[in-house]
Length: 199
Ligand SMILES: Nc1nc2c(c(=O)[nH]1)N[C@H]1C(S)=C(S)[C@@H](COP(=O)(O)O)O[C@H]1N2
Ligand SMILES: [Mo]
Image (cartoon, rainbow, N blue to C red):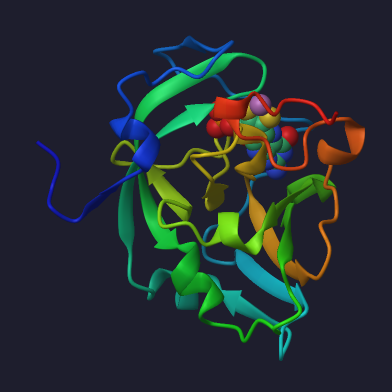
């Protein structure tokens, strides 16, 4: 049994858990472009920019002092694999975004990861209750291969939105495509609508 404090991503309550065109995987593939950056967890930082009242960087110490959440969710890669029942632990994006004053004209964010990777989200999708900056998966610290020390997890969108080795969040007014979105991937990427590629 899972503890009472666990947030269940709404998609985990669907009678059918595998979106169209996907197949279930039991093991957990490692997928990204470029090498695996080795980031010291004690010197990791997260920088907020763009349409925020004051640009700021939070340190690892500040991050680890924040209240934590546990989320049970599914993970769907656009290449076709889906991994169900992932137990993520970390800090809610709601808690993180409360640390900065987002200006009212901001409607979207650009998430920045190591090696210049970026992906975009609407503020609404970023602030969904099951979205978090994860440090642990299934009870263990995230390995570097899977995005450790800290990655974003956006369960209800294709996994390319779940930026590994997150470094920064920029608030913007208009949607601004990231790495895959500017190479033909869909702006939003809802697996249940099969939003794989831009139409
Ligand atoms: N920084 C970064 N994050 C990334 C990627 C990437 O190339 N760079 N690839 C994305 C894609 S396409 C997928 S499917 C998931 C895979 O996460 P995993 O390797 O932990 O399974 O990471 C996403 N996050
Ligand atoms: Mo992916």
